[in-house]
Image (cartoon, rainbow, N blue to C red; front, top):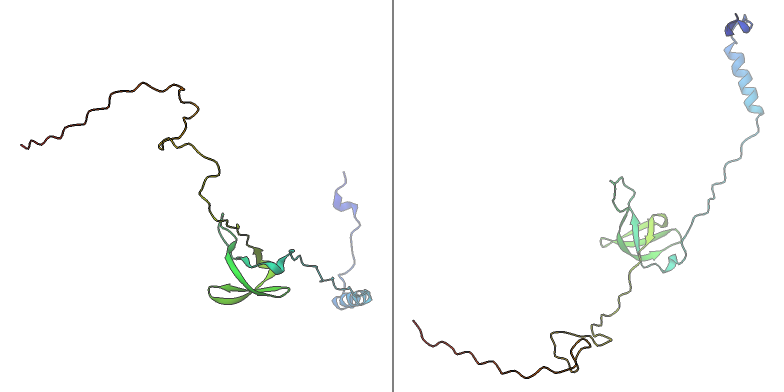
Length: 155
């Protein structure tokens, strides 16, 4: 039976000299060509129509718990540059990077018109014509109810 350690020939050489090892490392690394730096010009994404934004949300990068909205309330845009916006935050002008902003969309309010476009049936109001579910015949006249007498006797 052969053990894995016995398959290799024993190394009877002495450990390498540290000074010669360092000399060989220096010569090896000096022969390597220099590395070119990585291209750092990563194009940034700028949303279309950013020059027309009037209100924006500002992303809060702090650590938050679950189900917490990552953006703070909408703030008014005072001025803008290609990479920053000046915002009115708590009556102070603060400059914020475009990367932390999100457009605030507002619903266009329309004046409320409470007049109905079509006539509606109101059961509490008298109608000028009978509703479609009313009988076509008129009921027979009944005697008017007698007026109640007021009790003037005081005990």
